[in-house]
Length: 89
Image (tube, rainbow, N blue to C red; front, side):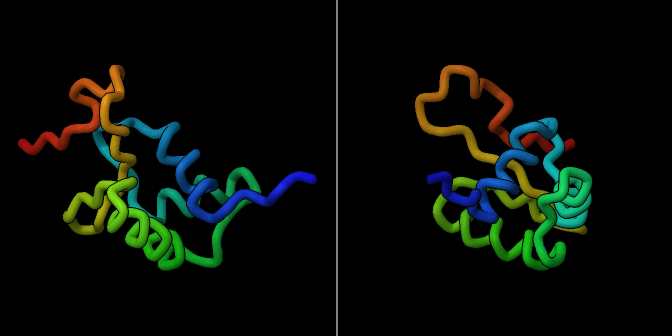
C-alpha cells in the first residue's frame, strides 16, 4: 500500500530542485507544483505549510517582499557548505 505524499513533501521537492541561493516565493512554488499536477489550493496554503515547517527549522523564511523560502540543510550535511547560508548584498 502506497501512502500519499504530504503537502510539505510536495513543496519540499520543488524547493530541493530550486537554486538554494535565491529561494522561491509561495506563488512560484504553487506555479511549479501546478506544472506537475500537484498544486495546493493556493499560494497562501503553500505559505502556511512552509511557515509551520519553518517553526520546526526545516525551512528558512527570507523576509523580503514577497517572502521567499528555501530548505535548511540538515545539521552535519557535508554538502551544505555555503548553500544553506543566506547572503545579502
